[in-house]
Amino acid sequence: AAGAVQGIAGAAQGAVDSAAGAAQGVAGSALAAGEGLVGQAGAQGQGALGAAMTAGQGLLDQATALGQGVAGAAMTAGQGLLDQATALGQGAAAQATSAMQGLTGQAGAAPGQAAAAMPSIDDIYEGVVERLRRDVLAERERMGDLLGDILG
Image (cartoon, rainbow, N blue to C red; front, top):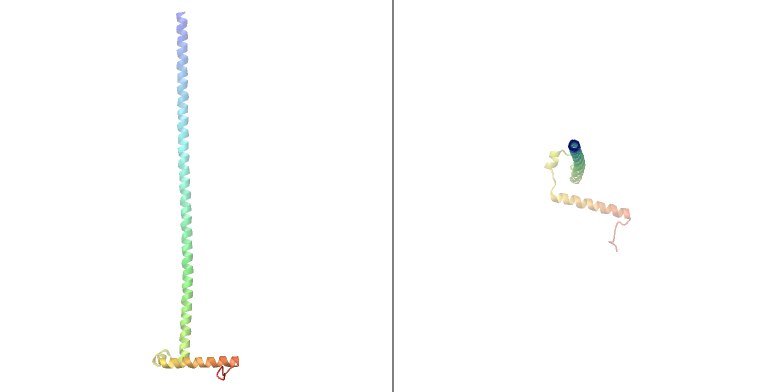
């Protein structure tokens, strides 16, 4: 009977050892699987972070390009307005010069002659007053009222 008890005890010990080995194997497999999942999650997180950084850089590049385009368009429009203003200013200067030459009678004179024969302030005043008199007379003729309110 003692041999049978020892046999049963040996078999029980073998079963316990076998169960312990199996438990250690399952624990090792679970640990390896857990580490694998952690590694996969870390790799996916790094991939997501890299994708987010790439997308952010792309958006920044697009915003920079749009800003440069807007700045270029604004500069072009500003230059166009400046060119128009310059042309208008030059046209006004040419008209003023032409009007001055018409008042002074120097329209056909060379530039050196016009400068040498510049009229005095009194001559310019007389020319302007004479021109106004002619314009008033022409307007009264057009209205049919040459005498105005002189006769009452």
